[in-house]
Image (cartoon, rainbow, N blue to C red; front, side, top):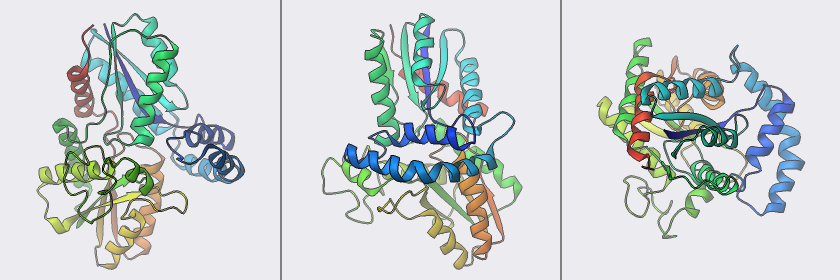
Length: 341
């Protein structure tokens, strides 16, 4: 039996200040997330962020919390069950979160104790970034060493260009269009500090040096998060056959005052409304499960912003969550990557 470890970012255990503070402390305490000297990170986190942000974030989480709890958690759980069904009895699927519970550690222990012959780890982030995929891989390697795992292992680094992923992402947009047509389709990806992108540039001379640096995937920018985001959008647009002027890319969830990758989603939404776009559909292909960033930041805040700026109709495309074509995509990714014991 082959083991499968699905990993998503994580979520607080409850939409309350105490639980949110614990989650943020673990998340933002990761040196791959807040990339700065350890003492500065500690001061920023403990003297500023954890004193002010938990209450605000908890209030935001309460707007999206359900009877089943956190949407990201139950969508991830449903996906793990669906992938288990798709893979069958020759595989055992376990779910862990990089931060929060269930932890990656508990999921890996579950696989080890079940006697799996190998482990394939899939971080559920379509595009590679050091702060997400890189951190998850580092934790996987740490846990393997901690538990003295000698099993064959494999890691799926990204799947932004996978045809079945793009097919499923396109299908959910087409289905959402049944709610009503929109003049413009905005792809909103999670943002990153510019410094993260520049640190990943092996040449030190390409990243953000010219406007077209992310237009195509080359050997130099093959691991560039921003370039992979644009490739994802282009792969979906090609399947939708949309005109160039009817879609665009932006980046959301900026935190702090340092420069983040642009264009910013908040600016893009205002600009589209000012240009006379009356109906807007937003899709978030860096998230595979609906969460705070899609349900509160986009479906609530961005929708309100668009209307206040003069827009009339705003549509938020659901994430892939646990839909059948997505579960089958994950299963195929695992089959293709699984090591043979």
